[in-house]
Structures are given as structure tokens and as C-alpha cells.
Image (cartoon, rainbow, N blue to C red; front, side):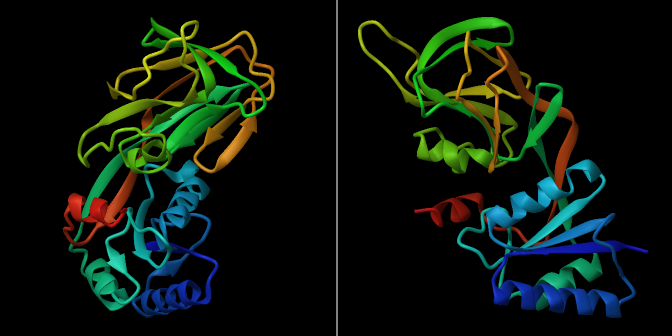
Length: 257
């Protein structure tokens, strides 16, 4: 028997839609199971979707996700709040495709962290000096606020606000972007985002990460006691998203601006 869970945004509309999805699926003999679902229904925006992925990270790649947009941005979702019946019809008929997307991973102080959009280091208290290596090859010494590594999905998120390139859907790439770099006669770096193959490992090292934070999507962690860490695409986990209808990537991109 197919098991399902529902994650909703905090507003009443999203909760009401979540309740409707639950009642319809129960009437079709599906099992409601918040702890160990086969499918997670996400009602909200992209922020809610990412929170749902993190909540069920231990079940990836066995669990799949299906979203309905009621939030402020629906880049991960294909269905809008007035299309609940259409979404349910598609799911119950099993007439859908499953797309897989990579996650980033890093290990710090024995803890393993996965990201849907990006992993970044930021220091707003002082200038952060970073030696940047790409697959063990030295690239540069950076001075500024920090660095951001994003997935294709994350290229339209914080990375875009940093002036990073948007990566088209279907390209299995990652991207490295500067966060407020310092550029003058005594301090030089690439000063441009760099798009990298999925096999690239990004190593960021420093004599001191004092007062810096490690950002993993919306979560942050102190990294005062470390000297270096690596960011790469995770080999073991890929997010599986149900796609019930075809919407142009560029149409979704156009909704951003």
C-alpha cells in the first residue's frame, strides 16, 4: 500500500488544501504515514519544498516529492492552488514522470550536511580569507565575505542574487560564486562566477574561520574550529520529484522577474 505524508505552508489556505489531499487519498485506500512515506506532498512555495526535503533527507532516494504552489515562489512545483483536482487525478492514475536532482554534501566536525540549493561560507564580522582549490588544483586566494556553491536548482536562488549565472534545467552542473569580494591592487580573485562539472570538488581552506558560518540552504552552523572543508555533489542521494505536466523551464524562469 502506498504511504504518503503532507507538508504544508503555515497559512490557512495551504492547510486546507493539505487536508483535502489527505481525505481524497485516504478514500482511495492510501496510508497516511508522516514518519516513513513513499510520497511527500508539499503545499506551499519553494521554501516549504526545501524544508520538506530536509525533513525526509534520511529517506532519500527512496521517497519522492510532489508539490503544489501556494507560496511566493513556485519554481519547484508544476501545479497551482486552483489545480488540486488535476494534481490528484494525475497522481492516482500514476501518469507521471520522476525527475532526479543532485544534492550537495559537505562534512564538518564529523557532521554530514546535504543541500538542495547551496552550501556557502559567510563572515559578516570580518574579512574572510579563503584558499580555493578545485579538485585539488589551486585556483585563488579570495578575500571578502565568502563563497557560495550551488546546484542547478539553486542557481536561481541566492546564487542569482550574487550575480551568478542561471543554469538551465537538465544540465548536471554546479557553480561557485563570490560573496562580496574585495578587489584592489593588493587583492585579486576571479571576480566572476564559475560553472563547474558535477565531478568537481570545491575545497575552501583558511587559517581562521572565526565568526564565520556554514550556510546549508536555510540552516546555518558555526565553523570557528575548522581549517578547511570540501563541497561536492553527493553520490548516494538524488532528490526524486514527481512531474505530472510539462511546463517550459523558461516560462518558470520568466516568473522570477
